Length: 412
Image 1 (tube, one colour):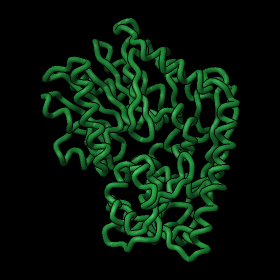
Image 2 (cartoon, rainbow, N blue to C red; image 1 turned 180 degrees about the vertical axis):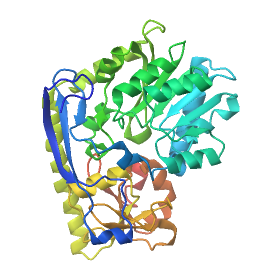
Image 3 (cartoon, one colour; image 1 turned 30 degrees about the vertical axis):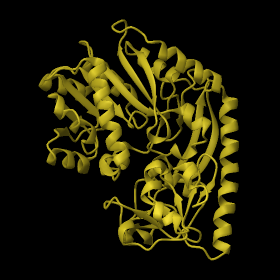
């Protein structure tokens, strides 16, 4: 397939995680009698524009029309969106009545933060169940997949936007070019686009290979995003890093020539180049480290199993399915996953066929395998008593480690 960004055919595969089911297509008990669909999960590097991407597209309707990830589930993410709102309103000088459009708005958690500032808001999300949740809480949301056509509908009905946001969604886009065209239209009259996306540089630095799954079609750097935006008359004028999701970029984008380019953009470019984000050799080393992590983690899990210890997965995030299925971890080693998201409870993680139980009503194991390691700082205080009583956290990324009462303070 051609590059998703520049349409070049000079793609080189560097990581093959095998055929895997779509991570968020959780199974019901009635589904266990037949095999779920599997799709290739292979990661490539474009030698022309340096964009990193997977080379197979599961249709967006399969992945997103009913979506079980809910933004409001964790306090960490709610606080992140509150902080992001205050920062953007101040930096961009947004005023009451200005329109904010959020692409992939989920349950409306981020848009709800703008209410206190008197801003008009509109969410656009292809997941019908999440759009319904958002509308019920009073956050107007269109149950559509955003693209250039939807952007024109918004302009016709609401006018152009002063701010368009996309948090944790810009790597999901099957219609990448149509979406970017739509954003350019929406912000044409003095608006700004804010994209928050997992940093590819961070993924490389900390071997966050489990951020790779079928929903994540592209993995971004400033350089590769700039190649995309430049095709639509847009440019990045500010770049920053946020701690959310293991390290995310926050880039501010505007029509070319309308904003002064901050020094932060050149700095992030330089940091990415120093890390080797523009070289295939960097990604080959990344792939080698993935299989070293497998060996280290499996040694820990097998040791616990040999000693008769009980291990549960803590959380059932999308990234967890990638880790379990890439390393072929089944219920022989990890008996179940526990969750607070009631939309996941009672279902099974695809591939691994691991049952998802309610954390509140499930006994505690000898150790938890922390699949949602990006929320470790939130989980540790909540489970302090468990750890002090002898419980363990097995954290797989970036280097497998066991957290217990002896080293708890170091990580908390």
